[in-house]
Image 1 (spheres, helix red, strand yellow):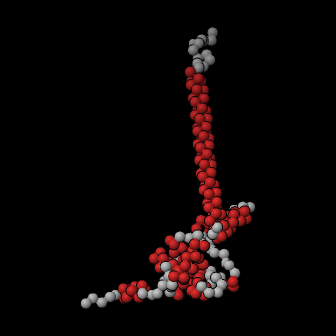
Image 2: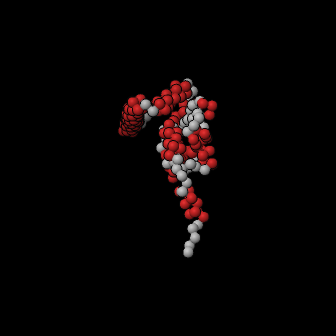
Image 3: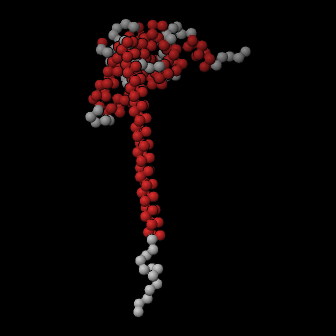
Length: 203
C-alpha cells in the first residue's frame, strides 16, 4: 500500500480548513477598492494567484501571508480577521498604495518640473472617484478617458503625418539643389573656353 507524501498530507489538511466567507469578502473589498484584478493583486502582494483566490473564497491565510495583506492594504488586523473595530489603525482611513499605471503616472509627474502638482491632483481626483464606488461618476470618467485616448491617438497620427510631410519637403529641396548643381556643372562643361578654338598666332 502506497503511503501519501508529506505534500499530499499538507494539501489535504489545507483543504479541510474551514472557510470564513466574511473574511474573504473583506479581502475582496480591499482589492476592489484598490482597483486591482486578482492577478494584479497576487503579483503585487507576493502571492500565487491560487493562494489569493483561496483566501478571497474564505480560507484564512497563514501568519506570514496574512502580514503581507496587512502591509499592502494598511488595514487593521483585528478588522480583517473579525470585522470588528476600525478598518484602519487609529480609526483613520489610510490611502491605499498607488499601483500599476497610476503609480507610473505619479512617479513621472514628480519628475516634470512645473507640471507635478496639476498632474498629481488629477491622479488624486481619479483615485477619489474610483474609491467612491459611484458607478455614474466612474462611467462618466471612463468615457472621458476613452475620448482623451482617442484624441491623443489622432493627435499623434497628425503629428506623424506632418513629420512625414516635412521629411518629404526636405528631400525635395535636397534633390532640387542637387539637380541645380548638376545643371550648373553640365553648362560649364559644355561651354567652350575663350580663345581655345581660334588657332591664331602672333606675328
